[in-house]
Length: 188
Image (cartoon, rainbow, N blue to C red; front, side, top):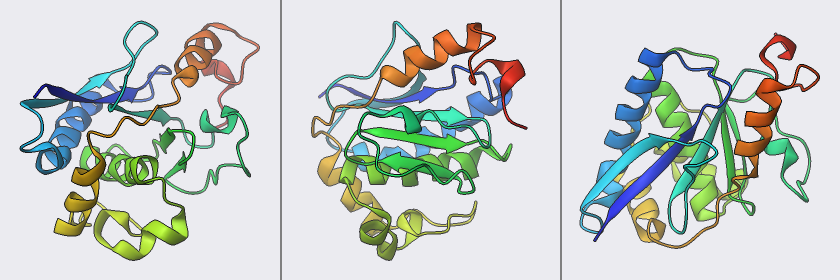
């Protein structure tokens, strides 16, 4: 048994320090029942160019509203719905949450939902009927159901490659004033 890590990619620093800390704790609480019995520990941690997920671990990007990194996934089918709370390209291991709220539990539940798409490799039509955090609409009070836990626990240790190229794109773009990912260029 080893430590299971859920990576938070906030390379554009959309989350305040307090929100990031609280979000990390909420993600750890949500994933605890999914990792129980399979891993000694689990942790939510922050991704950067030198710290990235591998093997069975998960990655979720936190983005400003109306700005996507997942749209850069090779062979992306369609465009992300920026009006939604998040997007996943399930066959590419790429998930993102649009930070439209400063409520850490809500953002953690959206991340869990997107990571369900990611790990289970399910489309909206396939996932949303399962209820709880798999539902089409997530609120801060949407429950994590036993079925959600069971679904994620089944695949939690499966090696599913995460799309980490977005980390480098965001890190470079944040420093490039001509990039859409440069803070001064974000759509507001």
